[in-house]
Image (cartoon, rainbow, N blue to C red; front, side, top):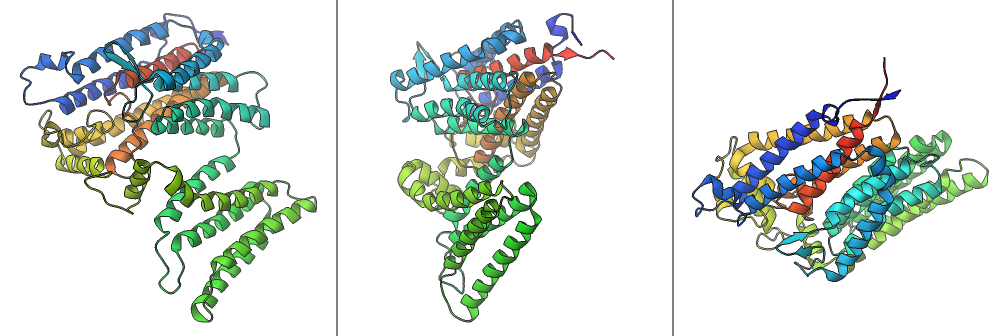
Length: 489
């Protein structure tokens, strides 16, 4: 293997650059539409620094200059200085908590003159770089508990700082980095735990007040216990591959669940939740006994999973109604259909749906969105920028934007897979994961199928910090990709 020669501009991936520029231009046009008013009379006013479209154009230019500078820095420099960059951004993040002004309850913006910077956007880059450097070091083993805990600490530390700034939405983005750990060999049990936790919370809260027709029993708690049974028994079969244990648990749980329900409905009515908890207790005891006999050591994790699942679900009500802030609780209730507040927490989403629906197949045309012009949708040029696209460009224009984003993310995955070392591959996947999370959650919350957590749509939402942060991530990886080694055939 030998280092590829030639000018850096001949080695960077121009397909990715093209997709980036296309998204940036479409994003700027969307901001023009979202910030347009009847007062404006000429095209050049869109470049005025008095308008958000003009400020965004300036940030796009600044980001391109920064991107060119980043392409001049060699790959090993990023890897060697990742720890310093991480420490500096964490220090700035902590400082922000104390010096930032209160903006809608958040202490996450540092004001410099007429500009405001959000350090949390740059902490993503530092965290991604540091995680890639740590996983890429010699001797790293994801199955080593010490190495795994250090990876988790790298991810969780900036999350804690951002939560302290009262920017919960930005903090949630870091959960996407756990997908990289899974890609690098982390056991799927952690991914299952995350998925099941979401399922327990949503099902338990949503159906807590709905009851069986023939029993005085809430659907939510019962459904959660059944899911715990299904997930834990499936882990025995597909993770541990213990057929005998699987057969015993499957027979006992299926028989016990069905018989108790039949007896309660047709013979003697009683609280079948008691049976469910007895069955879960039996599962834990049986799994631990198999360990005691010197067999199936992985059973300890399944037993802990069952106990942890019960403890987690038992705390959901308390967290929902005593820990979450009122606006967060209402947003979840609106999302789950427990409450309808068209003039309150659900107003943004309701108006966003109206704007998108009014666009029809081909849209009303550039700058012709009535919902947009009349400012019916709050945050229509930031978090809810996609509703402007839906209204002005319609279904076809919205679909084109989605296709471009999907192509961009898939391109990042392809570049990540062609890296010749772990550092490059992991860093590439962190980009793909971060962009995928932002894209999925932002579009989902605009359509009303995801909670409104206030995260931008990359390259579209107005904001210099977010655009510059995404550009730094992308152009750093483009340099890493350009410096990869190629095998001569």
